[in-house]
Length: 449
Image (cartoon, rainbow, N blue to C red; front, side, top):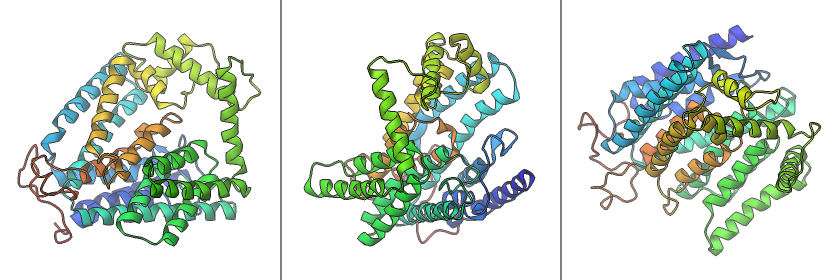
């Protein structure tokens, strides 16, 4: 089966790459198609661990979106808005720093090279998507967002079908992606559903159906981080002290509460309850015992903090091999996997110097997105939801995240000279670029170039 999976992903990813570079119309929907290739053709496949389903160290599930991002890089010819100069400079500095601490200091190994190479590759995907979608007008951008939301809802239906038929142990609709990776995708796309509901003036029945499908799929995926991410998205999107905002928040929370008391989500609620119990014990200074379900997670967090303290300035170097070396020096805990917390784990791997660079990059990316006061606030909400979920996982290297960041940043691009003239446009005419100043917008009338 594994050989067949590799053949499928090689063929599908290459086909998507060729499809996306053929025309602007095709490239616009490369993100949605890349996600879809991980869902619908594999709907009847039993779950396969990401640790096994790899090719040359890369998880097979990463290949479609990676090829989609490379296709945009080919179409862009390395053309980027000038406003990205600082971000590009920091990304280059970060890659050089990481190469030194990971490959030069940590050793030239296949694993070290693979972990390091994932960063420049994801940066390339981000900049390519940002440059491409900065040429997209509002109408075209909304169609792209709508199709992405459609893939999400249909994916949740596939997950529910898989669970009902007993194909999967939960409602994870990406059989080659771990459930915690799948819920990152669900939570980061969810605010865009609220955006489409408002922009396209969809019916309330459409909204209730879509939110219901997503909430039920998350509940049956039994992921604490997914439920927290969904709730965070709702609260951040409707976080206004107005009657309308409060009523919408209350309605959404009421729907989720109904699921909670229906008995469907008992397993997910039990997992959330264990988090609450563990947190209270730690706050009161009580010791955990190894019979508790969260014992391993807490010990890994303590080990990660000790590792970060011992490697404060420059870190252990990227990758599990380097992290394990530092972990065993700082902690005597037998398990040596990461702490399931991006901020702590990557601080330990990068040190204060490298982690500060990475946070600066992420901060500048967030500045590219529409603010929470904008009608397009769903873009910033999606970013914040991912930031919250990174306290519970380490999926920062998902190419879907970096393509998604780039796509939203590009759609949010407004040159300073045109901001006043076109305040609601996602891509006003005449932006300034690092190269090729005649880089034209992509509109509904110009999709075949």
